[in-house]
Length: 334
Image 1 (cartoon, rainbow, N blue to C red):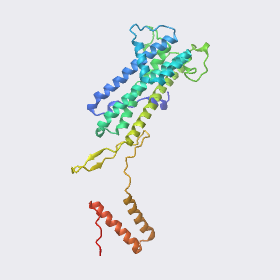
Image 2: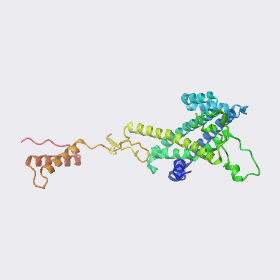
Image 3: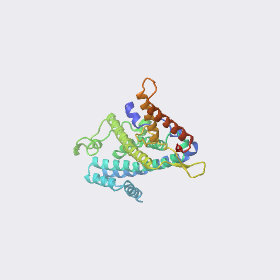
Image 4: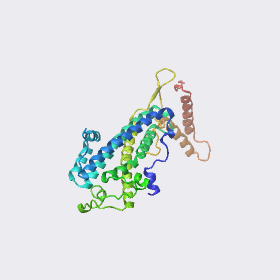
């Protein structure tokens, strides 16, 4: 695996590094919910996918897997469920594999976005104690969460294709990581991937090195699929924030006047940029234009014409009055 691909879906540090200590239990709870969803979605889709690929009956007397599958369909929504059904109806190993793999990823996408929403709320409530704006903070933690479980996808792909038979004489590392596993051909055939579907070759085997590359592909696809949805949700959240009136604070004077407080969302790293800068006041622009006019008329420093001097003086006086907070007084009639 190249360094570029490793950086694409590997975490570079612990998630606790930028979390206030009193928020760690809440973040741990959210991370645990993501792990639970991976177990539920992964195990359910793996059991049913394996049974269809190998023509075996699912051992589910209490209908726990079946109930969870129905729960997954409800959570991912009608569009994703329809795509799943269409894949299963094709009744080829590659289509069955794709149907359950996609359903697995859709289930995890729903959970990741639900966690992102909760992290956004936590970040907003504690933004003054964070090292970055709350939307960026929530997106970064959700992205870390997604990448922390990428190894589970490799296990899922192997387990829907084959069962690793225990061999007491096998090397302990091989028992755990199954590096010599050889993938069947159907995961790379259409509609799963790019190769032409050939029914006679679906159970032909790739070599071990190509099989590891295939596992990396599905792992990378898992990360990209979830992170694209996360990036879109973060952008939508930033857009919604930008449309809201800026949060106001009541003036300390108690007279009911309002003082604007600029929004804290920044543009670092994510491509969303609510406009938190206050626009320059029209009178400021006018005053600057007058002074520029005087400079342009007298570029060498000589005294400008009387009507220009009078205009600059009037603007300076007005500026001084406004800065002192007093309303400009009308000049007395002569």
